[in-house]
Each structure stands twice: as C-alpha cells, then as structure tokens.
Length: 404
Length: 177
Image (cartoon, rainbow over all chains, first blue to last red; front, side):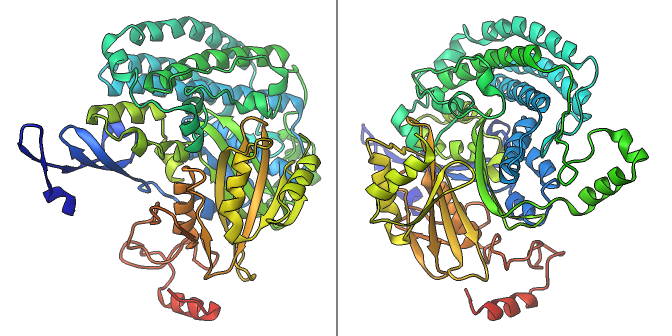
C-alpha cells in the first residue's frame, strides 16, 4: 500500500511512518475467523478494514433447495451458542406464512428454551470478554455453569449444541419427566452464582480501566448503525422486541428491560450480565404458568408429525403421514413474511418468500451479529490496538452468524 | 397505529413516490416505489415527525429469473418510537442501478455490499461497493437463480458443475459479464 511509505512529521521533528497491521483470521481474541487490516499510527489505529466471509457457507442459497423442515438444522448453525432462538425465529416465520399457531404448552417450552439459550450465550461472552483482557478465571467459572444449561439441553433435546428442537407448529417432543425440577434447581443455583461472577470482575480495576469509556457510541449513532439487542440498549435506547412487539407468550410475562446509558464496552458487558437475571425471572414465570399437560405440536397431518409416536407403529394413516412429511415435506401457500425476534445478539429476522411449493423461493436472514460487527471500524478508529480486543468482545459477534 | 391506517397515511403523504401498496399477511404494509426514488423516499420516512422510521432492519435482494424485471430489492424499516414496520420494494432490471441508502442509514453499507456480492445489484453512490463474503477474484454472483448450487468446477472446487455449462447458460439468458 502506498500509504505505508508516507513519512509523517512528529511533534519533535522525528520521522514516523504508518504501518499496516493484520490481525486474524486465526487469532483467539477475534472469537472466530474475523480478520482486520489496520493502518497503525504508532499504537493508535488510523483506519481499519474489517474482512469477513471466511466461514461463508451460503445458508441462504442452500435453504432454497431444502424443504421447510430440513432448514431447521441449518438455522442451528447460525448462532451456535443459542440454537433454540434461531429455530424459534425461523419456525415463527413459516408459521406466519401458514397462518397457524403452536399449542400453548409448546409456546411456553420454546420461550423457556430460548431464554435458557440466552443465558448460555450471554454467559460465554461475559466470561470471554474479561478473558480477552487478561482475567482468565471468569471464563472458567462461566463455562462450569454453562455446562448445567448444556445438560438441560441434552436432557430435553438429546443434543448439547445443535438441538433443532423447534418444529413448524410446535416442538419436536415434549420435555421429559423431571425436566421442570431440574430447571428450577438451575435457576436457584444460577441466581446465587450470578453475584460471584460480578464480584470476580466488577471490582477489578484493570477490567474497569480497560472497558469504561472505551468504544462508546451514542444512541443516535447506534440506531444509525443498526445496532440491536444489548449493544443498542447499552447506549440508552429502550427497545426490546419481547416487550414491544411480543411474540409467543411474552405478553403474559412480567420482566424488566435492561437499559444503560454510556454505550461503552463496560455497559454492553453489564447489560448482558443483568439480562441473565431477567432471563432467570422469565424462566421461573414460564415454569409457573405452563400448562402441565396438553399437546406440544399442532394436530395437522399436512404439516406436523403425529404428536404420539406410538401411533406411527399402530396406525396406517400416521405411517403414511410420517413418510410423506419426511420424503416430500409440506407445501406452504405463496406469499412472504418477515418475522423477527429478540435473539441474544439482537434482532434476528427471517424473511421468507414462498412460491407455494415445498421449498422456499428465497430465505433472507437478518443476522444481528453481521449488523453489529459493522460498527467495529468506527469504534476502533483512533483507539489503541489493545482496545480493539475489548471492543470486539463487547460487540459479541458470533462469526458463524456473521458469515451465514 | 393499525396497519390499514399506516398504509392510508403512507398513500396520502407519499403518493408521489408510491406506485403500489398493500397490506400483507405478516401484519405490516408493503409499498412499491421507483428505484430512482428510493433514497429520497427513505430519507423522508426517516425524518417524518409522525412516522419516524428511524431503524433500517434489513435490505434483501431477490432474483425472479426469468421474469422481467429480474431483480427486486426489499427494504424492511422499523420505527423504534412507534413500534411499527413497513416494507419497501423496488423492481430492478438486470442492467439497472439503484441509489444507495447509505446516506440515510450508515448500516445500509454492509447490507448493500451483500446484495451486490450475491446478486450483482449495483448501488450507486455507495462509498465502498465491493464483495463482502466471496473473495475479490470470484466470478459470478452465487445467489442468482442461474448459478448452480454446487458452483463451477475449478482448482478449489472439484465437485462443481462443468465450467462449459456456464457459457451455455449465459448465452441462453443473453447476459454476459
């Protein structure tokens, strides 16, 4: 690059030159395969180019050749820390196209799973951000307790990570016996441990120095850059889709929306910490309100597998139904729908166009990490190289979701 | 604000821009405007003191091959103040260009780069229009309907479709690079 040879005159007449520095794509603090090209003026960044696409799998193109049920596992692989949220956003969009609604019990289960995954996602990043800044301990504690959520996921869905639990019209199967008690136990333990995490980091002077006032963004700029989720709320914008455009059964729940003022790295981190408490409240309310019995998937042989698995082995019609749905999928009336939910990272939206066949004509994913990451080059300008690490950690991009 | 009222408001206030408008099944209005008006229309919607569509959720390109005009660009707008949404569509011929809305919302930058990368839709006055997911030397636009799912066979992709089929396809549709 030609800029590299330009010599700048320093304060005392010394000659300096800008250096082009590459960070990533293989670097632990980039949380995946993020690459940055930075024009460095000493230790400060004069300009930055963010390069993504190292994990591009073409999910949107693939989805056009899959049936509607086959796409659910693809959505797992977007934000792999919070799969039930991704599943939920997708199935809600298809349900909108089909004009159906899941049974009440299924809606409670989905919300509970989405909130559990929100805790799991937030927990990882609130441990990883201090680790990037040198406080290793928090991540280990966070991973230990995240394991409880992994176990709960495994118990309900059979998989620790890629659960594919939601189905169009409900969930794959009912939660197993003893699950609610385990969730209650988790809520109880987690509430107590939350204060431990904060005690580990909140009073740490190094952590505070490296996050407070770093990477601050104003409310207007945050909206202009399309930030959403905790990144936006940390700047003082009071917007949470769970409350403002409620989906599923969120309108029956009472919960706080965490809003902070400064919009810096510390506030984004703090916002997530407090949101975990809110999620525990939501899960407890779900457990209290959830109907103890009832179907967990709609009774519509054209769309959903029979709710009772035994039926497949005893009834001819159910067997044919299972076979038809597995082999050919179901038809969705022609039309279009955009549905978005408050995913842990922000507004996760699916825009699906249907031409009336078993496969969607076009699937567009509005991935919150993709949009949030864009602001990095603005926040990083004129900061120190070390602060870039804090900013990336606080924006919380999941590269699989960024690259789709 | 109910959707029918929103659509009526849009039609009365912005009748000069709107070609067509309907209420959609997903509970918010969808309006169509001429591509060359999109930036002006978006800017007015953003600064409208009543509606305040201050948040751009998403920009999405769609390929309707073999229909003419071939492309559609879809904008999803949201108002954080009023909690309402609107969808804007622009139909675009294959060799046509559309003004960028980066001057209205900075967030449009990467969305438009993605649409350019995947469909080859050119946004004029975009500050930095280059590929975002694919590498710079990549040929073609992978999400177009005539681009094979497995890609074209080359040294990196031994399982792709034969490269000879590419020329046939391009001649069939009468377009070239």
